[in-house]
Amino acid sequence: MIESLPRREREVFEVLCGLESATASAVRAGLSDPPSDSAVRTLLGRLVAKGLIVHRTVNQAYVYAPAPAASSVAEGALQRLVRTFFDGSAASAATALLGMAESLKDEELDALQKAIDQARERGL
Image (cartoon, rainbow, N blue to C red; front, side, top):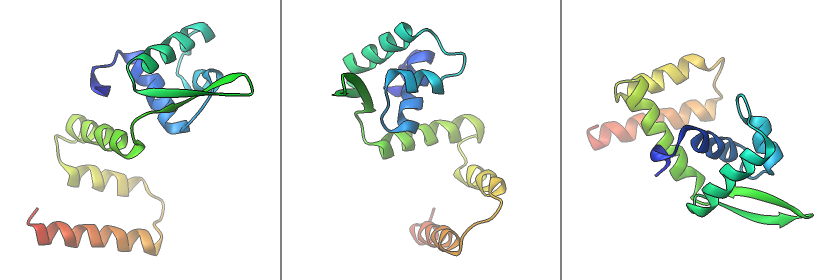
């Protein structure tokens, strides 16, 4: 469903996912070329109505948070990124990500090696 959102709603949702939970003002601060406060509240209200985000009241202010598990949203976003910019190649995307890293910790390298070994075992 995230893919079918209008551009601004998707941007609001992505900012909120990055923040994990936030007020409308904090979401607005994370937007590129932010619209008015009331427009951000309207966009958040639309996302609530669609069941993509939830809100709770904290000190008389609404605090919004993504409704779906962040990992499923991240996985879908990553799949779109790989499909769009890396012609569907997870290896190309991983290579590009590794090229961005200034350094990797030993445990990160171990985790990467383990993922590669598991992919080989599965015949991927």
